[in-house]
Length: 226
Image 1 (cartoon, rainbow, N blue to C red):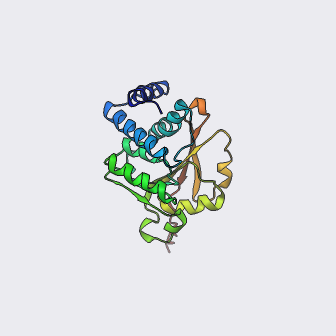
Image 2: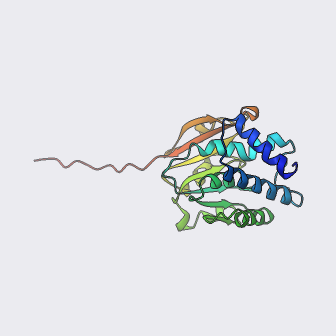
Image 3: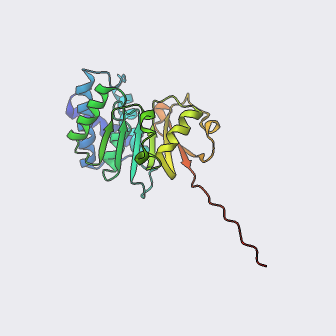
């Protein structure tokens, strides 16, 4: 990317194009994340995005827009296949009090995520260096997250069913989808349903698909009066 001052100006410009007004403190933290990402990307392939505008839109603007759809009662979220740290880190910078778990199977990328947590002082964040399937047997993590975010993982009915085990009843899955991806609703089975779809960045033709895990209804038989 360009030098630090240019990146900061470009970040504000891309945010303004999406009608996002960044608080100076948040803008500085996002720039610090981008600087760290740029530094590490020279050693390991964290992102293949070359075009600066496209990179900012994908890595920063999309998560900021999606963050507006997070309910005030959300206390925790888990991000699957975190890689470069987006969308997880920008969302956590917006909501630093939310507990965040980033799941990344590749050790070098997990190391980057751990350093990002330290450098950005994300005190409620942690990294799990493993495949998400390895977390499924853990009782403590089952049905625990208010939100699950996912961008690059290939989806299928079986994958969505597995991911749903991380979310508490009433929780949500945010799927960051491209224009080429559709048909998510056809993959869903009870207790999951597609709740809404929101546009993200127009130039990328990207959108956010929101899936809700419905609370389990407990049926009670009414006693007959004799």
